[in-house]
Every structure is written in structure tokens, then in C-alpha cells.
Length: 404
Image (cartoon, rainbow, N blue to C red; front, side, top):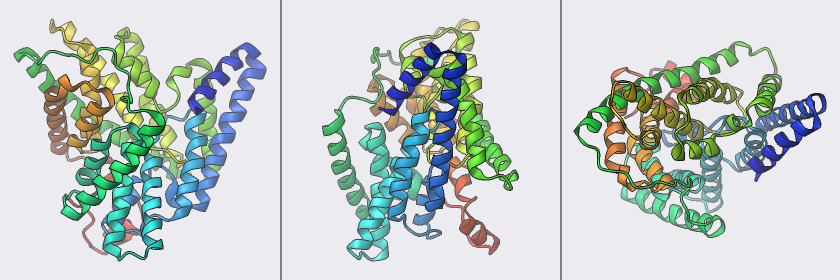
């Protein structure tokens, strides 16, 4: 709904004229960014994705999420995502789910182990609800957050996902998140298998670079710590407004553009421009510390890289479907950056319903995963967790903070 109103606002701004229209866009985008960042003061752990705090809780490095996070994440995320910042909705829904689980656990006075299980299960449900992907949400709990499978955790997670996703699908419908026109693809031949292996290596390396881009901009934001965070968020709000004025389809989390790229082969010049802008724009928005996640921008970037690689193969005489490589790129880039390949495959399969690409996604995601691992890059949420003050202190004390 917020995306719809944002697009209507961008259309009105052009009819209103450069002075009135652009100034209105700037005022609204800056206001949303500033208020969204200000709300984080009431629940500091609600800034950014928040998934790193869920993982820290599982490792007994941080307390389970509390109720204020739910409200800050909801209203702050609505403002920042709705205004056009390149952030994902899954970060807010995951941490909101954790907040609900942690609060219920305290109300019913569960012991700490059961409280953790309920918090983690609710967090995975948040991801499943965000993308209409119950299997992906459940697998995220096991593969990324806990890196463990316990029967009691499996049961609690599956029950939470069942209830949460059933409720959301009853309200919103059970259709895949992406409306992909062509969902039937041929099984890869020998030449295409070789291409997928090369693609996995390429995506793995690009995933490492993307993670470093996110961390560099976070460090740059920390360098200007004397500047109020609301001021820094407001500056990025101006960038968002300018993007809405000149290229509104590049603003926001990237869901609409991702769907378009799954259905249409854009000219390579356009795809490259999309990629360059989003590569900088998404980490820039995330660095402000406003509520919002990384998943949706990651998926779009993976799709863009899939189109670019398919074009590059065409230059050497290997013709492949850019639409297929777009979908495979989404899952592989997820595996490379977050280091959760099974979650990425399940997530994109459920979001696109392109089940014919299962083998291609598994193969490319596995190669991307091992490429990133060989380059000795930390998964993005592990790197973000190591930035948490409590975790930094434990690391200084010589305690183990790296797992899996």
C-alpha cells in the first residue's frame, strides 16, 4: 500500500512542476527518514535489519527481543520502506516476530530455553510471512540463525510457521510473491551446467564484494559519529527523493523491479545502470540505521547479476535464458552473502514457483557458497553480529563468538 502511494506521489510531483513537486518529495522523504531513525532511540536494537540481534540472542550474547521493538519496527519500517529507501521488509517482520515470541514467552513465564525456542520460531515465521514462503522461513531458522536442528525447535518452528503463514495467506492470498509469467524451463544441458558452475563462482565473488560494500558504508557512517543519526538519515532521504524524481522504479526494496526482471530481458545498458545504482543505494540506505532489512535488495541484485552474466555468455556464443539466470542468481546471491544456500533455494522457489529451476538453483548456490567461503568472507549477519557492543566485549574477553 505504501509503495502504491509513493508511486502516486512521484507521478503527482512531475505534474506539479520541478519547484513544488521536487521540494514536496524532498520534504516527505527527509521527514520519513528522520522520524524513522528517531523512533530507533526508543528501541536501539530495532535499527537496521535486527536479524543479527536474533542470532546473538540464540548464542546467549543478547537478551530476547522485547515488545517496544515491535512498534518501532512496524511504524519506523513503514515510514522508511514506504518513502522509497532501498530496504527489505523481511528484517522488520523477522524482528517483529521475535519480539512477539519473546514477549509471549515472558508473559507465560517460560524457562529460558523454551523462551529462546519460541523467539527463534517466531522470527522464522516473520520471514515466511514476509515472502509467502513457509519452507524458506522455517529453513532460515535452522540453517542461518541456529545452525542446528533440534526436534523441539523443529516442532515449535513448524507450528509457528503454519499458524503465521496460514493467517497471512488467508488475508493476502496464497499466490507466489513474484508473478512470473514463464515458470517452465528445460533441464540444463552439459553446456549450461558448465555455465552454471562459472555463474556460481562469479556470484560467490560478487557476494563477498557486496558484503564488504555494506560494511564499508556502515564504518563510514560510524566515522561521522559526531553528526546526529537523524541528520545522516535526512541526507540519505534527499538522495531517495532525487531517485524518486528521476528514476522512481529504482527506489524501494526492489520487489517490483525484481518481478519485472524475472519476466522481461531488459537491454544490457539498462541492466548495468540498474546494478550500479542499486549496488550503492541499498547499502547507503542500510547504513543509516533506520528500520529495514537486506533481503529484498539482495534478491534484486542477484537477479541483476543473472541478467549480466547471461549477456556475457551470449558474447562468447553460449545462449541461455536471462530470465532463468535471473531467478537462479537471486538464490545464489542469497547463498553467497548470507551463507544459507538451502534457505535461498527454498525461498526463491516458493516466491517464483519456478520449480523446474530447482537443480540449477541448487548447483549455482552450492558453488557460490563455497566460493565465498574460500574467499574467507564472513556471512553478512555474522559480520553485523560482531558489531554489537556486547559481542565485541565478549570477543575482547577471548570468548568464542564465531559458530558454524
